[in-house]
Image (tube, rainbow, N blue to C red; front, side):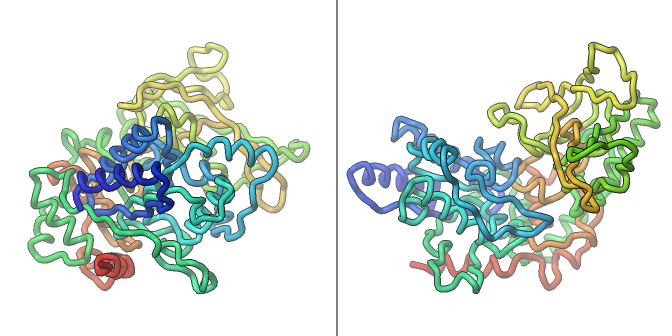
Length: 463
């Protein structure tokens, strides 16, 4: 089905629902990289709001990157879903109560459609939580609270970090309704992103389904290089790696490059305090987690300078595009008390960041709390919500698009679909360099997500 046919179907469905039809749309809209899913997403969102003459669509995605692209919120934020604890998926969700429930029902009273992006990364367990929460918010026992639900994404991209894939109902949930199987497949096939670059399209489509041939590998081999000139210079180009370890190593290497050129830098150290009691003579090194994911995404230490490329690690203002994973360049460092420079090692400044199309904004330090190690209580950290970002992981780049990137397709690839996601974020072959290429990872036993491939075949076979 093409973009026009989808547009007509949704418009006709809205007309029928306005005339009393109780049937609701439950669609899974998908396609390969660059087939225009985000365009269709925004096209349908605007059409639904236009037909109802009000804001009738709620929009959400799993991560901040897609959230910024489609102009919504994260699923956890919008629906107040429980977050993972120590990397484990939370299976039990508390019901909303009291004034909080009344406020949220008011926020959802005009909602007729719910659009969810990045569906490949949403576990089935979360789909059940969404159904349960919508029933409560709309005060209805109908599936998904009786509203239309449209799922967007590509099952061949990255699967959930935790939990079952969205199409895989866990055995413990049988014989409950299989929610995924309520959705109808709509597949986009025309590539819109790499227009005129049919060679790249062929490579991406072959990699997506695990059918790379010798001619495809030859094309990728020609992109392997260590040259760093022009748009691929170390201070400009984005490097995409499979692991956080390699991301950190590259960011430190680029930092070293600027230091070698005598760039004026400032070392910023987080202000930590123990919330639960006196913090005199406490060795914070012993009780503070080293993993940034366990410190409310706030780093303990940063080295920054004017011109540094950084990424937000917290939601600041969704309306301005200041969401988790937004990337920009520092244009000014603003020290406290109108100082012209850093006076004390504990000074935490504000910074002005150029986020490109999202504008230039001042980012202030924020305070967040997290559990200390050894049952020592709760630590409150005040720090800038940023990290250096000359490099990013494949997971953080899903659903993003860049003009130039250097991609690591080496032995550290560990997830099905990781290479496909990484390559599909670059607009053309001209904007691609490959740092390392492990052919076995792209053509071995699991070059793609075989379970997702089987599910796509099942969906296509339904009349």
